Image (cartoon, rainbow, N blue to C red):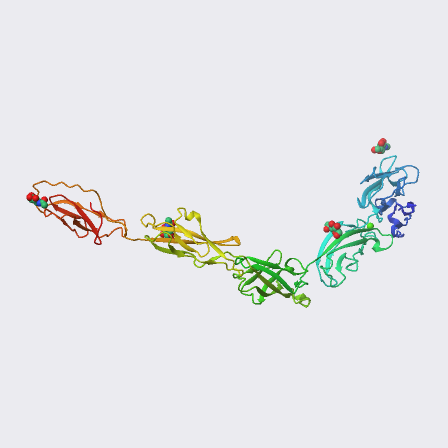
Length: 562
Ligand SMILES: *[C@@H]1O[C@H](CO)[C@@H](O)[C@H](O)[C@H]1NC(C)=O
Ligand SMILES: *[C@@H]1O[C@H](CO)[C@@H](O)[C@H](O)[C@H]1NC(C)=O
Ligand SMILES: *[C@@H]1O[C@H](CO)[C@@H](O)[C@H](O)[C@H]1NC(C)=O
Ligand SMILES: CC(=O)N[C@H]1CO[C@H](CO)[C@@H](O)[C@@H]1O
Ligand SMILES: [Ca+2]
């Protein structure tokens, strides 16, 4: 059946070509008409130009069992008596193409693929079998492999991915897909492709000629559907029946635009905060919903009104896009129990194209309840200083502290002294009224300060406890007699002269002030032979000879005879 497509060899003699037109090669969908050969044998004069070759055409992908006939090479010198031998050289000579030496019949020995090699260049000459001389000059000719539609269009990728902003207008280009067809594009429709959409309507369309995928439906909303899978077909033979086709899948995702405003889910929220909460601590979080993602959902919260404006502030958590309410000032349950703030939220990146979808802000009321905290007792002073005379009697009240429960319940308070600060049990505090008693007589000279810690505890809840320092200062009383600095034993010579210094005497006193004491010295027995001279506050001098007994006075009080 394929034989009818075969081309015959055309061998023309120059003489005839001017008279006889070679039937033009006609190619009508693979139907090739054999070309007839004519000649009258008058070739001798112009033998050199006697070979005139057209090209041969050969069908690709010939699959019959016998060799495919290509054509016949014929010289008019050939009388059919076996004296002419045809010799073939060039591409594939002897392998792909075989020539019958005697008849000039040319055959292809193999199945050929145009997409592999589209034509072969060969040469032929005719020689005399007797003389081996060329009867015809060697001439080149071409065997062209004729295309059949044996290749389907192929896309460069099995799956493409593309994205396009949501809300894009109809006709917006998304992606161009291109298929290749290995067949001969210059001949027939074997490689003429037409694109069509098999899946993805009515959202997308494809341009038949170019393979450009475009938006086909207005107002496509990412918040409704984000992913689309589109299947595009490319068909050769200009899309006609019987053409070969290839398909590809295109995953198209809609990208976000800011077309959704932020909205609070509720018009009012309630938060609560302990009155003990620290300034800066988080009271709670509220969140507005925004259908968009990424920066299109970025929000900013603000307190715009309410009696809690000065007490609370709000900032945006950049990761969760929540509004975080924090404490700006200390709360006091006993003072105000409920605050209200009006919070506004808005998108930070508003797209002017979608303003009509707005407004891109919203407000909500946030009520904040102050929660009572069981607070520990509070002392009337942060520290107490009690001054007490060192001669104060045991059991006397020396001072008093006061504390109370600041809570609305006003629980009663009991007092105690921290044992670690009262190891020698110098003091006692009255459990109920906070009065402090000295349990021992206090001596300034052994301890000037008694620094104790007083505790106030709520009677029904021992956990609620406060402490305050009580600094007890012992004041000086002149309760110490002066003392001689040392024991004096004085010797004098018998012939000592009157008025000669025989001893210097000094004294000390434990009471305050430690320096600057003014002592008075006198002789306890009057003896005309000795006298004491007051050295103006300094040490005394005993002069002259005799038995020495001294008395020391201070503030006029006689104390200790020596
Ligand atoms: C012609 O050439 C062939 C091959 O080259 C050779 O075998 C043959 O003997 C030759 N004949 C003559 C007559 O020279
Ligand atoms: C394409 O989309 C399909 C379905 O949504 C999915 O299963 C597949 O993984 C996607 N392929 C690529 C390469 O994105
Ligand atoms: C007690 O407190 C007073 C006043 O702060 C201080 O001068 C003194 O050194 C303290 N005494 C003791 C024993 O801590
Ligand atoms: C009271 C006393 O001891 N007086 C004596 C003072 O000195 C003279 C002379 O040395 C004695 O004679 C005194 O007895
Ligand atoms: Ca094709």
